[in-house]
Length: 203
Image (tube, rainbow, N blue to C red; front, top):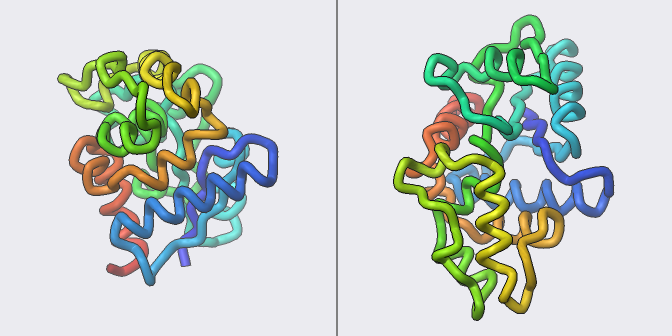
């Protein structure tokens, strides 16, 4: 069985459990119900990378799923290791035997996926949600800067009963609600993740 090491959940065990549950539901709806990988919510991106490296060195089947945190150059499309090695603050190299298909990016962050399913956002926040405050996705959801995604979500949600978007309280609940088919249609990297996981799971 393949294990996916995921960035997310912070330092609190309860939040890590919420992260794992949300990704579990999202990946099931992606078409893997009944044939699921093992999911590990690792908190920080550094922890996710280190746990992934340890698993690979032990000969286990593993995948890494982290935010890109920045635009990904076209020449690095579907080969995230150069991006992660060159990005300031990371400097990560692929462990021996790890391939491009073992590492996957949420471009630029998980919240970019939310922009693929505005009706789900509206449904979650209800009255007071201001769609016109969200950033434009005319160039595609992966072209929206992380800072613009966060700013737009906070502005769009501040008048709702749930209040301004919160990374901990809201993010994983929204992930459970959005449609994976909409995400993979809008995000090349998300579709690549799904395709590679199908190969790993022999589907």
